[in-house]
Image (cartoon, rainbow, N blue to C red):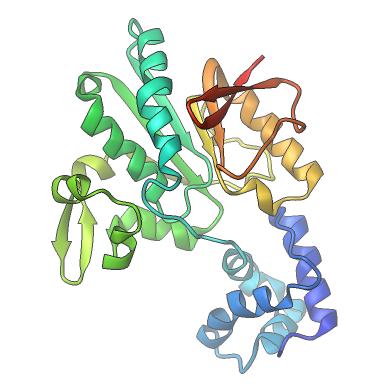
Length: 271
């Protein structure tokens, strides 16, 4: 272990304050794993040296350290039952309600490297061709600039493609580019990426018919979780849907939301 107790305590406090992520006191190995590559890239012999330098000169390393401490685990059509509920119930309901205005807004609020918003875009193209004549916006936001850069490239490895992407989608919406797969321009054009820190005021956040706030709340403490969910509800259309991760629940987080069961999927709607 090359990250001492004092520097680990400093790191935990700084990450919690800046981006709301809670690193448990007994998980120093997580910080070590996430920062080891950055330490090597910046020319330090250890994570300890990296943090020591950061504490002396925070500005050059600040965003890089915070970015490295985010968890960008994701895959295409993650938690497939949720995407089936979106396809079978949520989108048909919202589309019917927007038939006059013909405008649809979806927000992937913790999009990581882009698999979630691109999955939504592919689902729309595959199952709702009538939306081609609509004004459709898929906004995708994340704190990590590194993850967003990869998402905007639309370029994925064979392993990333194999994690969740159905074969029919692969043949229709991806093309080979060397050892990688490039998502189709028609799908890439449907998604707009922005950097947002969910624990700060959401000046660039959209008002959406469907919000996916999945697999991010588990990293926050209770006050931060409550603030983020409340802000999400305020950006949700009156008849819209909010989805969190399949293993997450926000029943006791915001009294302004009610839970609704769709098949085996729980979603949340404004009261």
